[in-house]
Image (tube, rainbow, N blue to C red; front, side):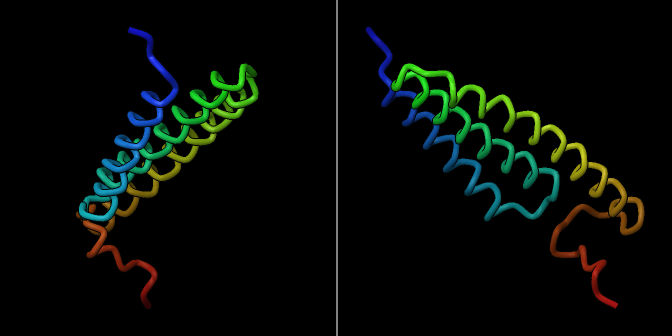
Amino acid sequence: MDIQVAHYLVVAGILFSIGLVGVVVRRNAIIILMCLELMLNAANLALVAFSKLHGNEQGQVFVFFAITVAAAEAAVMLAIIIAVFRQRRTVDVDEMDLMQG
């Protein structure tokens, strides 16, 4: 049985949908961050699948840079979440109102 590009795209769509539901439904900032990373990885999977379909490496190079940026983004967001937790003792996004005066 040969794995087609459509199979990769279906898996990417399912992963993206799971991540989107997690972002919309959850209230924990760490879970939301993990769901955002899941959505980004689904997009990366689709890019690699299309890169394989067209026979070039441009999509794979773009995915490499996207993973690098995602790692930096995750580190910064985790640092922000830890700083907010130390001040407020919660990671619930409904209770994070630090911008209010």
